[in-house]
Image (tube, rainbow, N blue to C red; front, side):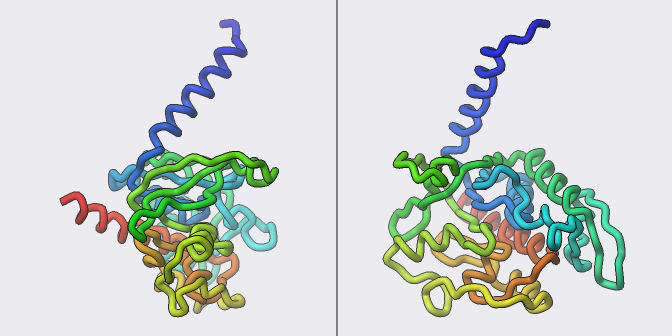
Length: 262
């Protein structure tokens, strides 16, 4: 068969356009494809909810790719290992309660499962704003990351969603938009982003789960974004809390969607 360049181009444009058009209305829009976002996407899609995941970078995986200081191994505790086991990711016991896994295998496996479960993943797209109706989030406003990086004056498009998960890590990008642009208080002690504290792995792993909750009507925070929003510690290259946080966010939102469907 002789390959035709025009057909290749048509295939890419048509298939991507179909995927993007389908994503303009979804149940859950997840912003940030780190470990928490990938687990949340995989779980929500598995449960039958239309799920779209937006990542501003070229690659998914967030901070998990680099392990610790570019040594691409990660650490999880026993509870986190259970999720890696479920996703078919190989782990090795290091010491009692400490398990290691290859960062590359972990990211690839999480992303593959999210895709296989039916989540639509879009990389190189930034979320620059949210849609507000009656003081509730009702969607995200998207643009090409390249547009943002170049500082071009190009208007964005919108995606309608019933819920949003901010899993953008330390920057807390969606929550910062709300803090800056919406005349309201966040569901934090001060009504604003509390900001993350210095590294304390044990405490941070605990509070990541505690802080995985609603921060604004229909907006939930997961992963490191949860600790940044509610003012707790960072944890460094241990990822169990991130994985469990994504699962908790998915479970809460799935229950909400079920109630609304009745």
